[in-house]
Image (cartoon, rainbow, N blue to C red):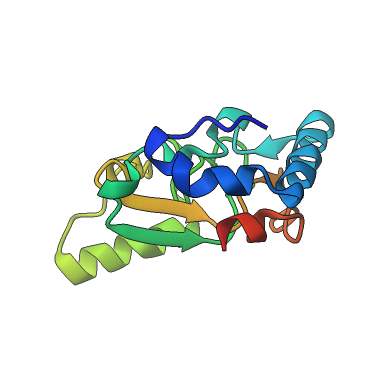
Length: 146
């Protein structure tokens, strides 16, 4: 499978993309997306690797799996598109940032601005079936994100 990610990540991930488990995983994901509503949108599955070059990554934040509600998942852990109500986990993050460093609670839950500054916002599981948290666990994503 050809995965479209920032060029700087390819030397570190290309070997994984050629592993047998990854072929099985992509088959599973294709089947799930063809039969069910899944998140994030297919073109956003690897979005975490698109926002900063490998060499510019300073921090890694690891989430569990994407948000599973309509319009929520955008391919970055804990991030939602503009205009989407902030899920409880994101509310907690913003409250902690506000308390710890005094940064005001933002209107937008879109964390692309963080990712563009070198924060890799990666979920351990990169896809999920709508309304079913953890539905794509133990299908191979864990091997990829280890």
